[in-house]
Structures are given as structure tokens and as C-alpha cells.
Length: 442
Image (cartoon, rainbow, N blue to C red; front, side, top):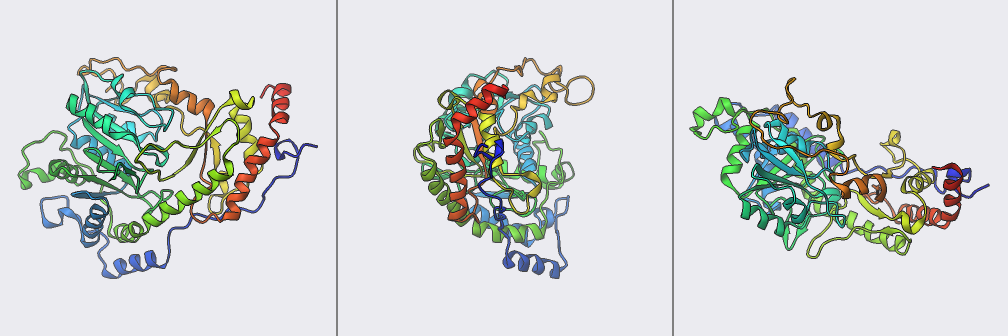
């Protein structure tokens, strides 16, 4: 009988990994304090002092802005809402194109569609899985209005060349920082490297309020427009005296007082939680070093990595075994994580299928039955959503990327050793996996 659990052997670990817990009595006390005031929200969708929300919202925004060296921080009820508000604030509209990564959560691209613009997917840099100035330049057209740069997995894109390109072409750049809080680049913090930055407070992020998000900017005009889109712009502009009505159709993207109070506590913890991820990754990578065909994330000079996910590059040419079979063998040796029992081991192949392969892009159906915005009379472009249009993203997803979350705070050294031992066990049995794959064709 094989030693590999996948082939009938005994799995290396059965005891579940510990849950990722970032809540404590401090958050409970903060929520209790708000409930006892009886004021769970104070927003009004009209031009009034309460247009800006209640005391916890204002305090949370002020503290977030200070923590990220930003002039303005605006809370929203999700990072998705923040992306929508930022794209709207940039003045994007029908006939425009927004360049975005194909290898990200769907909302990064859908933010363009909300304003009847067309997402154009630029390929990723295989070193960091982010957009680069080179891949963006290859997709620029006279219709390009904005760029959404996603700091994926906690990695930070090489922003200075991107911003130089944007200045040359008069483009607005939005950072999607949902997976990279506390990330830095050449001494500056993510969320301040471009015109606007979006952070997520969703329940499985580094720090969270259940649901929520924050938009940062150093531009007063963008801050003003984000606030309007967040809170029923069309009903506010007259009283406020706003005369630029482009995209001033508002939403209800407001964050409540309880979430804001919790967010203040979480913000204070964020630096420590990210540093613990970085420490765990350093230890784990020390154990994984030297495994042939497995490369650790390459962090750019002057940058830091927040490690939302530990993204490992895999080379079948070196191992002689398909990535998917190796992942199946790794998962067979590992247990689930407490509070996420239904998900199985938190390790997998790839991340998300490149977005342009989703049915909406393949069929170019957005609004109504006339294929807007893709076939909108105002749009003169011809977006390429074919298989092969972003080869590096496709290679990562279908062949070359292994992702896992088994380095979060709460993982002890013994837990990390078990993860490393699983990799070592599977790599020691690569000849057996090669033979298995040859026999079964899988």
C-alpha cells in the first residue's frame, strides 16, 4: 500500500487546524456600547449634517485615514460598493473602457459595467500575479478612461511605472486593496499609491466587521463624489450645490454604527495581524525551500506582502506531475479548519477562472436584451474575451498556481510544521504520483 493518503495510505494529520479568530471582548464591548446608545445609524440621504453619518462612522473614517496617511477615508458597506463608488467618482461612463486584471474577484471588473463602461482585461505579471505597466500599455485605446489595479493575494503591484503611464495618458487609477491591508511600496502605504484605494472588511479578510469597506483618497473632489454616490447623490446635489452631475445617481452604500465601532478595534489590530502572517510565511517558506518545481512569492524591491493567500508557483516540467494531481495528494493529507468545515483543506489549485471566461463576457450580455454595454451604440470598441487573450492568467489558473491559507494567525509552529511535512511527504513520493498519472491518465 502506498504511503500517500490519496492512494490508500494514512493521512499525515487528522486534527482540524485552528480557526482564524480576530474578534475578542473588545469588539463585543464596542458593539454593546453602540447598542446602548440606541443609535445604530445616523445617515440621512439629504443635504444635512447627518449626510456624513454618525459619530462612530466619523471616528472610524478619521482613524483609518490617519493609519494610512490619507487625507480622506470613506466607509462603505462593502469593498464592492467602494469599487463602484470609485469608478463612478472617476467619471467613467458609456463608451469608456476600464482596464482591469482578469485574475481577481468579479467585482473589480463589474465596477465598470455598473456605469455602462466595458472592462478590458490586461494580462498579469507572472512574478506577482498583478497588472504591470507593460501589460496595461498593451491594452490602452483612445477609449480607456481608468485602470483598476488589484493587489492580489496581498502582493503589491509595481505602482510607480503604472502611475507614470496613467499621467502620460490622463487616466484615473484605482487600487483594489481588498487583500492587501497594511501593504507598503517604497515607503508608502497601499491605498495612497493611486487616485483612490479600496479596502475590504468582509468576514474572511485580514480584519473585518462582517461586511464593510473603506475608500481612501488624497483628492478632495474624488472624496466628495464618493460620499455622494454612497448616499443617494441625486437627492443631495441640489441642497449641496453640486453642479457636476456626471454619475450623480446615488446608492445606499452606508456603513452602520456597530460595524464602524468594531472597525475601529479591528483597525488597531491590523498591523499585528499582518505581521503575524508575514512571520508565519517566513517560517513556512524556510521549511518549503528547496522543493523542486515549487517557487515562493517574489516580493518586489521596497514592497511588503500582506499574505491574504500564500501563492506558490508550480512547474510541472520540473516535477513531471500535473499540478492538479499534486494538489489532490496534498489535500488528502490535510484536515479542514475549524469554522470552515464544509470547505475541506484550505489549499487548492489556481484562484478564480479568468473573468473574461464567465458567461456574461463570453455572451456579452449585460443590461437588457441589447447587449449593453458591450454592443452599446456609444461604444466603438471590440473587446477580446477569447480563450488565450491573457495567457499568463490562464497558465496560472489552469497549470501553475497552488494557493493556501494555512499560514494565518492562530497557526502554531507545530501546525506550520505539519503543513510543511505534508509538502515534503508528497514531494518525496513524486515518482509514485508520476507512475499513477501515467497509469490512469489523471
